[in-house]
Length: 404
Image (cartoon, rainbow, N blue to C red; front, side, top):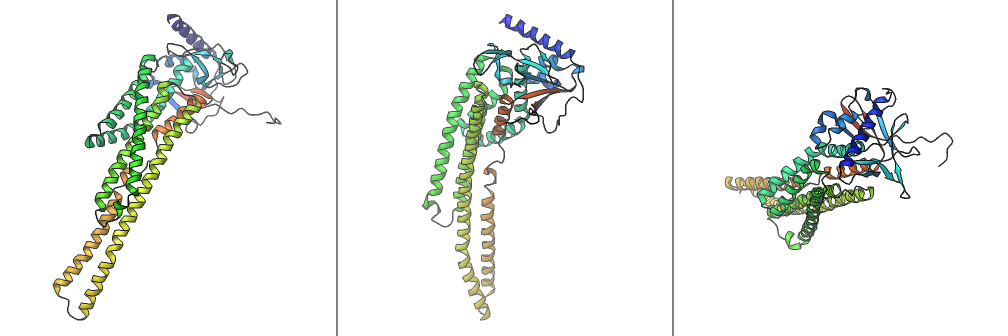
């Protein structure tokens, strides 16, 4: 292990010597930092990402590195994604080697944008990849944390102990990951926890979805007039728990490939689709519930209107005959106010469904898609005095007249 560490240090020194010798030009490439950047990593935040990442400061933070890009290529000059590089067994970083399509061991080249080829380096690409992934996750933590806080408050009030414990555990593992990503024992233990939570939350979403479908399908639930508020509130409670279970499933689904280190394009696409499918199922059931209660609310009002209209017609008839007393007038006015209040009450009941509406955006789904892009698409690196930028690699332009 010490020998590997020594090799890593020597390779990092070689990389630093190389990049220091390059001549950089500010106008050597054109990058729209507002539009093109996938991840921006400020140098002064590297130490907050976890253990070992301060090495990147030494690797990149040179005054003469302004606006330079570093690209990893194979011997033919094709750009390689970082994920193909071989890893050290102790998790300390990546080797500068990889296996080609036929399984033959090859050496990667770290190149300047002008195409110079240099000795391979271990540690730098690996640390950068993990730092970019953790930064990407951190950038979405505010929306994740806000959602988690609201959920935990509700679950505590409703005494949903298992679901609350699952979300607490997922939150803990996410926060611990940045300091343990190179610890194989911790990663294996954490993955086992997440896999168990994933199975549990998947089962919970299926159970709650079926229960809601069955409740809405019951004719007796909607056969009697009145009690609309009670029935709607019961369904809303189930929808709220169902929505939280879907969120916990998405949380666990997002963590599972990170902890198992199965970050292949095929797997991450599958994870993103499973999160999206749960969201679609919830949306469909929510719409069914909402439409059913709108139908019920309108029916209740329509049942009241004929009775009210008959009373008003009778009152006007009596008034024409001079038979309506002041007391009777007050009674009809009271009935009119009751109808208005009933209509307002129904509208307010439907507004109670607002907190359980499907979310337009899912931070877990978005992060899985972004991680897939980061790990499985070619990228380049740009640096300035304050930040490291991970950007999509430029598409190779075909020579004029070239055919597909």
